[in-house]
Length: 273
Image 1 (cartoon, rainbow, N blue to C red):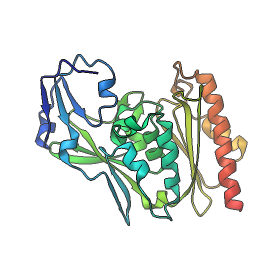
Image 2: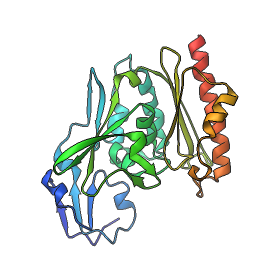
Image 3: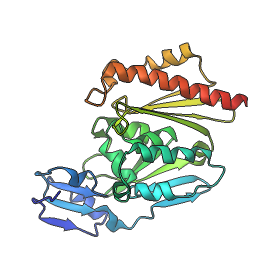
Image 4: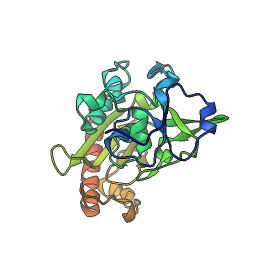
């Protein structure tokens, strides 16, 4: 969709431009959402691609994804064989339910910053202990992904800040993992997307997204019983379950418990094996 109110496009922004943020500005990453509907309030676009950030950096500390890393780049990346949790990448990319055209444009950072409950990159990063690096004109700060997305279309970004990158530590990447996703229709938006990971000591972490307006994570020293899991999930406030045409809160609550039990059973069985 044409944005016919845009007067200026800054193709090579600098850190100084963060301090010059004004009403009517928007940061442009892939643009898959920005150009999908009218934006009559916008006057200026600042193209994040102009920073030239490397999309993917893997080292002994873990994996760092630039905010501008495209979904197709992430899905096509070949991880080290002992980073077992990277098996989640394909499932999370597919949960975006976009064509190859969307995957070649949409970015990891854009999906997280949009802060939709069904954002699969939020699910991936939250489940793998992701930490966001946020840039401002005069510095930077780090915020865990679990704290970055605060609600539907609500993030921890302050005026003039941008998401620079997301770091996934190697300790999380080496965990075993399981994913469950459900929609009301075969090609519908996720009604619930849950990810479980397990460490070598048998500790289990369950991350709940899509059914809730923000990510929730529950950590257990060992795989919980059905009652124990249910008690933990009861900590999610009823108002936190999302309500839209893609699923009612009572249905989302039910499938969250169902998928959570499936994930715990899968990871517990793998530990016994």
